[in-house]
Length: 315
Image 1 (tube, rainbow, N blue to C red):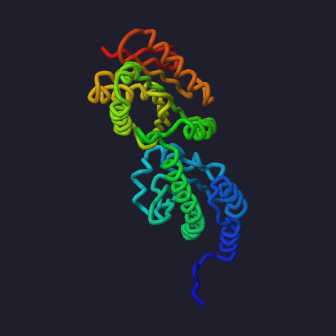
Image 2 (tube, rainbow, N blue to C red):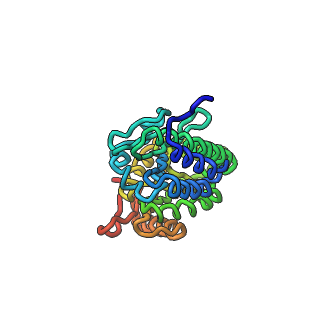
Image 3 (cartoon, one colour):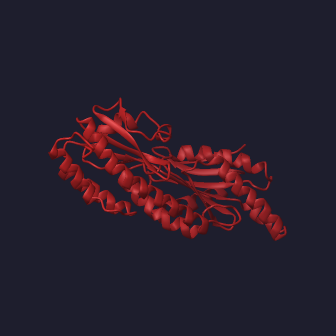
């Protein structure tokens, strides 16, 4: 009979127990809890974490995983490792290893492990990486379906209903991770007035170009929403208010290449101020009103820690 591993019986029994606990499922929350429990019971000397691309980031599977893998995750970009699939050592982490989370020949993230026995780590990686990769693949498929049914047909941006559902979940995640995110609402008052003098087809053609301009200035991880009429909402994960303002400046310049009537006013709020979804949107909305009262053109109102209310005015 072929021998699959040279591991001692005790370790092999631990692997079998872990594998049996992880039932096939596309529910990450359920599988996450099962894996944590299985590692605690059957592999107490192992540290493990899943590292997803932003906005999720590092998700510990064991108690000290954050501290264990910090020398690697704090100095590297996960995107540099997504082309890799194989089990590899982590030079930055003592007895550390990584392996891609693969499904349908695509790498969705990394499984990070730390333990003294490389052969045991490699066998454990095989057991854990496959179900986690399949879950990631299922979530991507679900996300694609949702996007196809939850976007504004004119601009290709998310619609408001879909955003509201997802943003509540995102704010809960921010509370757990203590990351900083920023919300910006952009109003195109001049264009809204001009559109009333245009045919619907003419106005729609211009606003469709606005949607294209949005996609040219934001990152893949940023969220953009057709909010209300000709207003837009941006959510920038892992981004301070000041950094969000820089993106909005670039957006304003791109809009002016489409039409001189596209002069945005913007209000920006940050999760440093509140992590309530409703409060973030309300703060950004109030700051648009302050930008309007400022009376300038292309004004952005935002707040900085310790600096109070700030205005950026295009001259």
